[in-house]
View 1 (cartoon, one colour):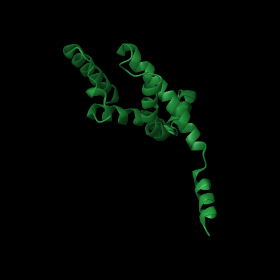
View 2: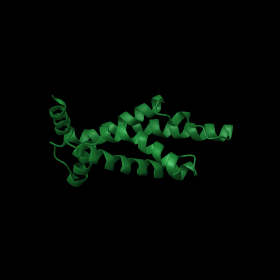
View 3: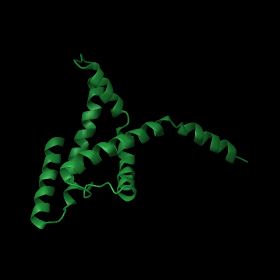
View 4: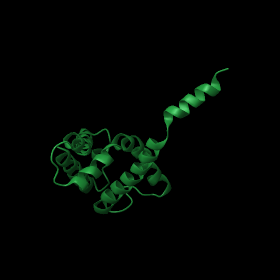
Length: 140
């Protein structure tokens, strides 16, 4: 379901942009139901192998990598908006910067890699220990 939703969003964006002679971004907004379906499908793709890991696997290395990425999908989801906005504001990298055939895959990969790096770093921070230290110091 994710691939057809993404393809339909891309087609609607291209057709709308050609017809209006301006970039139509409404079909790529995170509030669009098609993007919601695509996001859900991508999440399921990365989480699914963890559920099937007990079965016989023909590609154990690929499954291991997908499961590893799957551990960070929520963190990636939480941080990717900020990464996207920072790339657009400070480096002027957004889908309207250059042709969509290049900008969408390049921006997607760049945002994914940077968000994954932040998610890995965030998971290494021992939040519970920091909170307990803060509680101990704040008690009179």
